[in-house]
Length: 349
Image 1 (cartoon, rainbow, N blue to C red):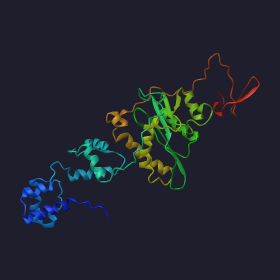
Image 2: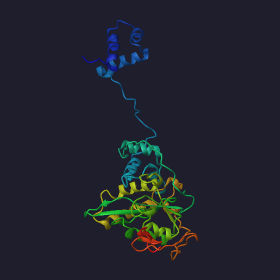
Image 3: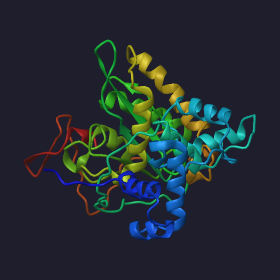
Image 4: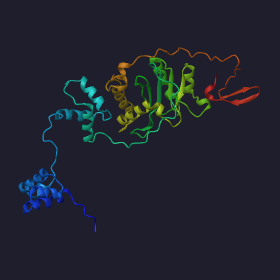
């Protein structure tokens, strides 16, 4: 036989029955059941007025809320949340404050609760927070100190081909310098993108990437034709630890928002995919304010780099104690009758 768990309604029944029999006084009945006299009289009166339904608990919700958010404001917030759905309450309110009509908009916490009640806030599983393995080798202290570059991953378009969107951002301004959709991650396709950016806005002090192709492949000193070109420009590329994206977290978080807004669904072909990315880039620059930039848009904080691109790469300069050897086209070099394989990246150097 299962255990019996009396409910509050079952415990009120003997009190009301004793009141109907009128054998005990009201004070005695309430003392026997362990309730106050006011509580006992309340349930007895409700039972006489409403019958058995009077024993049920009533809602404590107020009938009127003077500070209730107007329905038209709620409708405007819900409509704005869906286009696009990745912007939060603080960015939405900052946009509403600058566009007419400038009405009495609610607080950020109220907007967050409203969106959560409507099921418009995705629930993510909480993961254990593990600190990064180490700090980056350089800090951002001035504009265009550090640029970040990476591929967002392969995107399969409607015609069955795969594209690899390349993103290049300025770390201090959150400015998306470039975001073209390339057919592959080859150096021949990625290098012209960087050449156009450097020619337009100048060079950074450092370029932070991961250990993937074409940035830092598994070669001698992690050099590739792409990274060797940056070295010739006088800029040393830096890489994060393998499999540790936290030092490049801002860039990775931008990838997550970009993929959610432009790849679901993907474009019919590579050019259509690029057309889907362009509005997202323009909106990222001009519409949502960034809290880290005093709620200003990235476009409002943009400025060119003081390090312009040289017209010709500077010549190689080695210390006097070094003995120079030419690297041939096959990536090898000969010295003192001994042949050594270096890398095809250093060919001609």
